[in-house]
Length: 287
Image 1 (tube, one colour):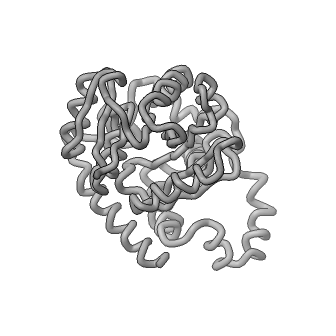
Image 2 (cartoon, rainbow, N blue to C red; image 1 turned 135 degrees about the vertical axis):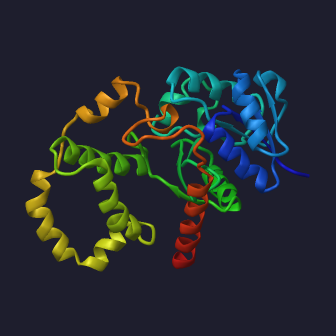
């Protein structure tokens, strides 16, 4: 009998994670109060169902919250999900930076909550950051890791969760320096994209930063770090370039303009298929 998952939050991430579970034989039930989100979920997750209210969703083997990064909302949803899965079953959160202690404060059994941070698109990007409560029952986190491996993901359990976990901290550190170079007039966004994509980017697809440092030589890295680190950006507020774009309503692809112009109706499927090919190559290299 197929296992069943309830996903609360039928937006972009909820849809991609729903597709992932559906592709691996799970029955997928979405819950979202917004009709447009439910319609989008049903259109992109074959064989799924969707309701506006959790009380109409029935029971499931696993539950996942995928709602916006609003602490009060996540607290409410996680507490409500305790009633829709068996006693002891994990209750998953796709938060990208909030802590378990914050989010599970209203749960009767907060040790059941496990962070499973997928990356967009959830059915394409293999990595998942996993964080379990310090009081979780023995074996709970490994059950979640096994579940994720069964979905052909590559989960990594974090010992503890600093704000942003691992990937977002690294991503934002890189982006802070990129924006600093733009603010300083060193290069344009398009020029920086060209340099990063065809240097660091292609290397990082096949090896992580520490393996790459080993390949380059740690002595070389130390020598460069000694003179370069003091000159790197260490600002603690967002870049003026970024703040100005957002202030003008230029939010990227969703608004039609960001660092680039995005024509209406541009199909993202070609980029996603290219990403799948890169991931397949990286998997072959890793194996």
